[in-house]
Every structure is written in structure tokens, then in C-alpha cells.
Image (cartoon, rainbow, N blue to C red; front, side):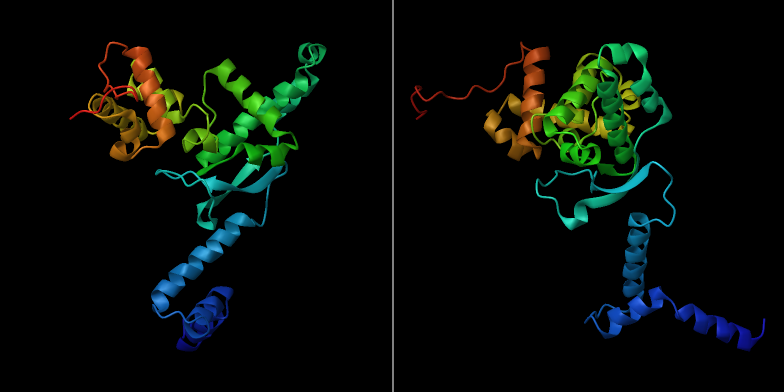
Amino acid sequence: MSASTTYAQTRIKHRSLQSLLVRKFLTEYGYDHGPVIAQAIVEDILSTIERCYPEHVPPRTVVWLAVRRGEGRARKRIQVTDLVPVKLVMFTDDEAKLLADKQLCQKQLARRSFNRARFARWCFEAYEQGGVLTQLDLCFLSGLSHKVVREHIAEYEAETGKIVPTRGTVHDMGPSVTHKAEVIRRWLRHQSPAQIARELAHSQNAVDRYIADFHKVRLLAQRFPVADLPALSGLSKHLVKQYIDLLCEYEPQLALHQELSAADPPVS
């Protein structure tokens, strides 16, 4: 390859949207951290745009911005940085068959079974792609009310024994039974961590971490008031309450810290 050809290719390569944005960062946006970091930022921006607006989306599929699954304690207010694009198949052939199932139609359960199946699948699809859907997301996707969505999710969990990974269950928000509490419940029922991880579609590291957190709460609960446990353990109030409830259910003989009632005299 001649030097003139290489030079021409370099000039063409620089006539790109990526090069234009890097140039704008360095000359127009007041960015002063150098071209290498600017290049990395632009590549990430273009990658995000490609994921949000893919050139080819399969039939029956939508791209949805879900809350990022994350690992730490979640914020109730969603920030722009909390979102991740996920692809959701609107319905599968098996789900469509539920609408024509004669027995379900006779019992007027066909549409309910159809929606219940796809609500759960949407949540699992999003979870596998690094996101979690809220019940409000499911309302927008289906056009059904929050009450109906909540009932369908509860029915699916009761029938299958699986916890649907909505934002409430994954991020310990609201009255939902969290994934973490369900891990501990199964562990207290003497299931192995490996079996729990397999059945709940969790990593082994995550299951081991939840069990370690439970041990932490168990130890602290014997020495400190329940109200102090969230701050001491670094876990949410909701999750701590669920762990305490599990302790009372499975280890009623365990001596937990006794808080003074309002009628008790103060300790001198």
C-alpha cells in the first residue's frame, strides 16, 4: 500500500461523526481532559445511541429504557444514569396460544393467562440485559392498570414459586418480597446456595453475599435495637424487617435485643 493511499484513508477516516464529536469536545464544549478521554466518551455516547436506536429491530420487539439493575442500594428517584436500553419481545407464539386455549376461554382466563405470562417474561428479559422494569413500565407496555399488573405478578409468583424481578423486588422497594429475602427463606429451608442460585437465576456470588448479610443482621439483632440495624448493617429498612421476620419465623428461640418500652423507667 502506497503512502498516498494510506494518507487518503486517514483523511476519509477522520471525516466521521466520531471525529466531529471529538473535535467539538476539544474546541467548542470547554472540555480540557485531552483527546484520549474525549475519544472514549464519544465512543460510549455512540454505543448508547446504537443500543437505544438499533438499525434493525426484530418483529414483535420494542426497545425500552429500564432502570439499571445495579448491585448497591437503589435510589427511589430515577436519574438519567440509572437507565439502560433493553429489548422486549411483545409476545411469543406460546403466549399467543393461551388466547385460543379452549379451557382457558371457557373459564374466561385466556387473556389473564396471556398477560401474566408475558409480564413475567418481560421482567426476566430485562433482568438478563442488566435492567429491571417497574410495575408502571408494565402498565405502559400493556395498557393495563397498576392494580391488574400487580395482581398478575402476584398470581404468577404464587403459582410458580418464582420471584419476578421487578424493580421493587430487586431494589428492596415497597411491600414486595425481595429476591434477597427469598434467597434467605430458601436457605433457611436447607436448600443449598448452588440450588438457590440456579432456581432464582442469580449468580453464586450474589447468593453468598445475601447469606452473609443475613448473618450480619442476625448477629446485630441480638445486640442492638431493630431501629439501629439498617445503619449498622448498611441494608435498607425494608430488607432488615424481612430478615427479622424470617428470624422470628425460623428461629423463634433466638434471643433478640429487647428494647425498652415507653412505660419502662430509664436506665440510670
